Length: 80
Image 1 (spheres, rainbow, N blue to C red):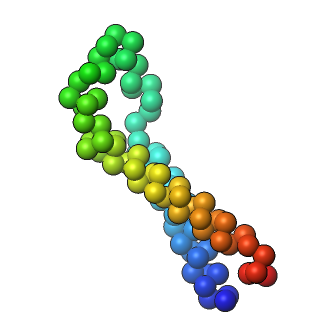
Image 2: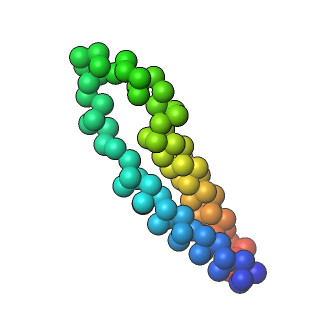
Image 3: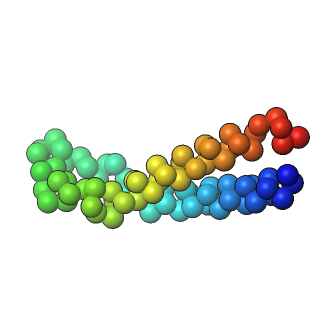
């Protein structure tokens, strides 16, 4: 049981570092202020899911889910 706990803790630490790096790579939401003037209907606005920014958002969500699941598993009482 201790080996599994150590492995899950290491995976959690790697996930935390990865989430930090992915979030820092994303653009700020202030770059989207062109919505006021109607400039959001550009090619990049329509295909955001296929762009690098869309991919980074999907990776962020996946890593956040992994973080919460690992945190929940590691906090259960049967590990003690």
